Every structure is written in C-alpha cells, then in structure tokens.
Length: 410
Ligand SMILES: Cc1cc2nc3c(=O)[nH]c(=O)nc-3n(C[C@H](O)[C@H](O)[C@H](O)COP(=O)(O)OP(=O)(O)OC[C@H]3O[C@@H](n4cnc5c(N)ncnc54)[C@H](O)[C@@H]3O)c2cc1C
Image 1 (cartoon, helix red, strand yellow):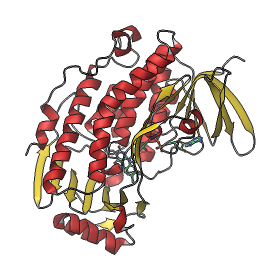
Image 2 (cartoon, protein in one colour; image 1 turned 180 degrees about the vertical axis):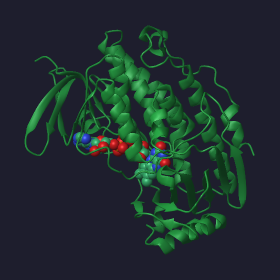
Image 3 (spheres, protein in one colour; image 1 turned 90 degrees about the horizontal axis):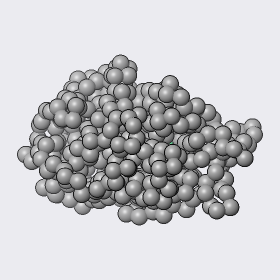
C-alpha cells in the first residue's frame, strides 16, 4: 500500500516539533502525533544553552519566543562552594543572550511553526506499535485515540517520544553509556527574585539554581543525591537552597512561591543507537541525560537537525539508510558522549568544589565546539547537496579551544 506520509513523528514536544519543522521545510509530507497536548506543562525545567538558542535563531523561531515575553539572560554566576564566578554572556555565533522559555511557550511555538511549514499534527493519538515490511523496514504506526485504532503508513518513522520511547523499544535500539538515576530534582516558580542573572551553584551534596523565565517569575531548582531522598515541603526546599548557597537562601526567603513544586525522582542516563532502516530517534528517545547540566532541550535541537538531514538524504535517494543513520550517530556521539560523561559525573555528586568547576569547564568546551559546528551547517532549507552529508563528515574538523569555554577559566 502507498505510504500516506513521508515521515511520521511520534511525540510533538521539543524534539518532535523541531524535527517536523525541519523535514517540512525540506519539502517532505510530515505527520506529528502525540498522545497528549504539548501546550501543557511537563516535568522539566527549561534553561537553554547557547547551542539551543543558536538553533532557535538559525531556524527563525527565536523572535516568536521573545515575543511571548521570555526575558533575555545576559549574565551568569557560577558558584562552587563559597567561590563565585560572575560573567556576561558575550556575543558569539550570533547569540548575545540565553533564554529559558516555559515549556508550554517553547513547545507550542515550535509546533505552530512546524504546522505553518506544512506538517500535520494529530493530538490525543497514542502510538501502540510499529508496522514492518517482511525485510524489517519500518513502514508505519498503529495509533489509538481511545475510540479506535488506525494504521498510518510512512516511508520513515521518527521516535521523539521521550526517555521511555516505544519506538526505540519496537525497533530494539541498543543502549550504551548508560547509568541509573543519580539525583532527585525539585523546582518551583517564585515572584520577587528580581534578578535577571542565571545562577548555578555546586556545593558538595547540593546543587541549586535560579533563572528568570516568563511572567516575571524565576525558576528555582535544587538537586541532591538520590540517597538523600525527595524534598518534602517548602521548609526543606528552603533549607537545601540555603545549604547550597546562603545568598540564594536569603533571596528565596524573601520571595513568594507561585504554584506548586515539581519533583523528579531521578532519571537514568543513556544513549541509544539513533537510527536504522525506516526509523530514527531524536531527543530523549535517543539520548537521555541527568537534568543537572540542563542540556536535554539544546541536545534535542542539535539531533533534530542531524536526523532531519539524514532522513532527507534517504528519502531523496542520495544515501542508503545504513550510511545516513551511521553518519547521524557518529556526529551526535562526537558531542553527546563527552557530554554524557560530564553529566553523569556531576549527577553522582562525588566531587569537591574544584572538581565540579573542572567538570563545568569541560561542559563549556563541549558547548563551544558544538556552537562552532552548528554555525557551519548550511541554513535549513538550503540546497541539500552542499550539506555535510554529501561532503562526508569529518568528526575531527578544526574546533576552537577558547571562546565560550574561556569564561569558565576563572
Ligand atoms: C527535572 C528535569 C529538569 C530538566 N531541566 C532541563 C533544563 O533546564 N534544560 C534542558 O535543556 N533540559 C532539561 N531537562 C531535559 C528535558 O526535559 C528533555 O531533554 C526534553 O524534554 C526532551 O524532549 P523530547 O521532545 O525528546 O521528549 P519529551 O519532552 O519527553 O516529549 C515526548 C512526547 O512524546 C509523547 N509520547 C510519548 N509516548 C508516546 C506514544 N506512545 N504515542 C504518542 N505520543 C507519545 C509525549 O506525550 C510527549 O509529549 C530536564 C528534565 C527533567 C526531568
């Protein structure tokens, strides 16, 4: 039977919407399905790293995030025990500020932009299983909207369905660089912390952070080892923030909480083989990491672009799936494996202040290299013949060793 779509994407949040946007702009017929409603909140803080902001900017989406009242973050403070490092976010790669849009804002803007680019979106549709041809190529999805089951066929299926990805399970995508959950995260939103600075504090046994977001609120988050258990109430939350940093504790004491606490009992870290014959994984489905580094969304944006380019090369007959998906995996892992190791080492809280500072420096270097790489990619929608896939990628291309990473030298 003839496929109904070129690509079906399971999951319509950051990874799925971004992949759908890029594939639609490349001229493919895209269907995005989600069992839920991506305009609702989800368990995730939402600080974007420079790479994430760079991608939103390259895709032309950033102005709409700013229009929705997302404040620019132009200063950052890193704390390691009693030591503080203050710095400005300097303009590099066309990015002069960081942003931390609330998920309903970010996810909705991305999905709306994907739909405006031609993607269809079906909400309230749970993917139950995949369909395969006799050779093992993925041919479509079986969906259930609670009333009836439908089979929809496509030339490629993308799993953007989060860390417990059903698409990954159905294709048997192998995991590597895996570790169990290491810490518990609690966060909430507060009025009255009138600070436009992103603060991230690492004190042995505790981590805490502040960042400004929509509606004049500040997201306040804490993390501590799994063995210390979940934070019970606002008194304990206050105590953990103050233990991480007395100044932050004072600021929090004077602030007013708006809404409830969000609690995460810990998530595992892993990479999965991100593509094969008729399928690909993006976002947490392909690469989940401990949230302490706040990189999941930014990584999802990188992988959306790498996967979209690989899928496009297969659908237009320029490459076979094995080669295109191996290219996607090699490039992703060039950045993801070092990042995963830093995220894991931070997550286990087995560091002192100097070691935490060294891990953050490594993180800065990875972000710097990744910005340099993304900056070199052709604009999405540009003639695909000139992209990295046709040129053949070189994972050892020249990368800077200074720049963004230098801000962590202090
Ligand atoms: C406590 C916490 C704090 C975090 N803080 C940050 C941060 O500050 N910065 C950052 O960059 N990252 C952060 N992250 C990580 C970030 O949340 C994830 O990396 C990001 O949400 C991954 O996006 P995604 O689109 O891959 O998956 P998700 O956001 O998980 O979306 C998956 C979508 O797939 C849908 N879906 C799942 N299964 C099916 C199915 N069978 N059928 C149909 N639809 C399905 C779901 O309904 C959902 O909408 C944090 C994570 C946690 C847990």
